Length: 444
Ligand code: ADP
Ligand code: MG
Image (cartoon, rainbow, N blue to C red):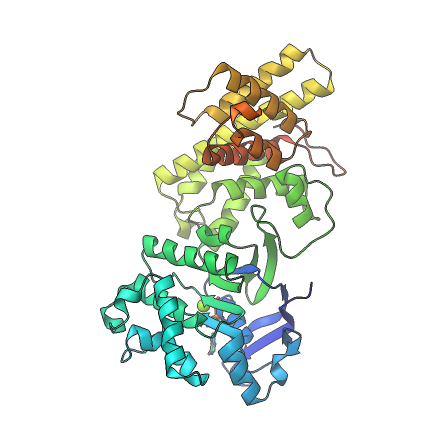
């Protein structure tokens, strides 16, 4: 498969040659594949929007190349550029950028006027989109009379009116309350999954990262790293896959040069992170690493969580920091049972000993489960846990078996429960498993 967008050593210098010259992009090389959902993540001012506007063809080149569908867009004539911006690319902005004097219907159909579509067809197509995004009832309102969430849905509809293959979004939910933000983010997800559009979305909010197939971390005009979302089937094929056994092994593929310790840090970070910004996240990685290496205690971990951001802490509230510390300690404690179970098995310990640790793991997984569990379910659950810990089954098998009805040989949990328990066991496995690298990890 060929990338749909490719930048090569892309550079952007603002105010070139002047005293206020500023290098906003310092040689970016990215490859984005058709139907991928990519997030550009990084602190304010790192160059995310600049990269997006380069792809839009809105910034003159200061160096490097951008290919879209195999064509160098810097070589476009102005006519070709207009066509490209009209029909290949759609864009959504943080501040909506609706035209105040036009009603919703006209805002959505405007790009079609420029594209020369006749008025009957324009209206028909616009109405389909209004309906789809649940805004047909406000078709005749002016933007000033809409809520933020409504305005952004209008802007999303407008971005799709010429059926572009690529959708760009610059902090599209940055101005929305959390409920509207979630609705709009779900809309992008659907546009990616159902309409098969390639999406490049800019955010500085870590809680949206799980939407993406891949995340590019941007800092100081450079792509610092690329992270593959292990929860999404990847479009960009990395290498022909042998079976991936644990999350740490997955992470080891993404970060082939990381030490096992760093991989475990990343796994924990995936688990703990909610609403942290880029800088908080980097600091959290450092603190988790110190904790895993035994350099700091649980108490100092908590202390760092709640130290104000300005004083080099993570800047969480006492209750959020306390919860995060609890979660972390509990998970590390429980992951030891994975290691113990594996050691027992390696040492060929009596089955009853091994079973005792399987039961402990089962109890960890059932900790937050409020339903009743019958003896038969427990028996099945134990077998399934043991198979997963010994590496006989894959994560997907484990989850499917938890969800499978009892009559068919499964445990009969609901889909959500099965998923939550699978994710948690994977976290325990990630911490409890030495990665097959040159140096073995000791149990925590
Ligand atoms: P982000 O979207 O990551 O917040 P931007 O891409 O908007 O960052 O900006 C990157 C850097 O380039 C910032 O330091 C910003 O001040 C600077 N910059 C952005 N646009 C211009 C411009 N038109 N002229 C001069 N400097 C700019
Ligand atoms: Mg920006």
